[in-house]
Amino acid sequence: MNEVAERDTGGRWLPGFTPNPSGRPKIVEEIKSLARQHAPEAFKRVCELVGSEDERTALAAAQEILNRAYGRPTQAIEQTVEYPDIKQLYLQAVQLANGHNAKVVEGRTIDGEIEW
Image (cartoon, rainbow, N blue to C red):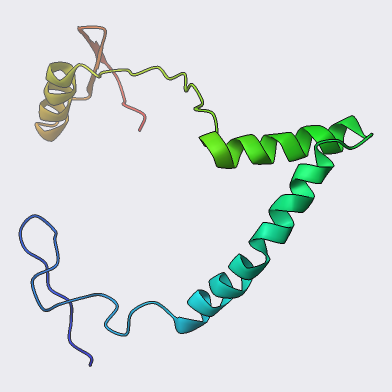
């Protein structure tokens, strides 16, 4: 099936079309199944490692258990959002389009070349 998957105006797949007509690879499900068979034994071992003499090992094991029980802790993200002055950018673009060699800086027009 070499049909191109089509989308509606919102970007969603149209009914009857899919980007992956054969579905997920079967090998992935087989590997997951095999891994899940060993999960109880692996979890038991991690629980044993919490009591390890090596504090780094005990901490890593405790973190793994807590992450699976409660999820990983959320991380704060610090960001600075800067909003450009669209009016000044528009004025600069119009001046350039009309052949003026002017640059708008902090609300003032400065003659000279503009570096992009």
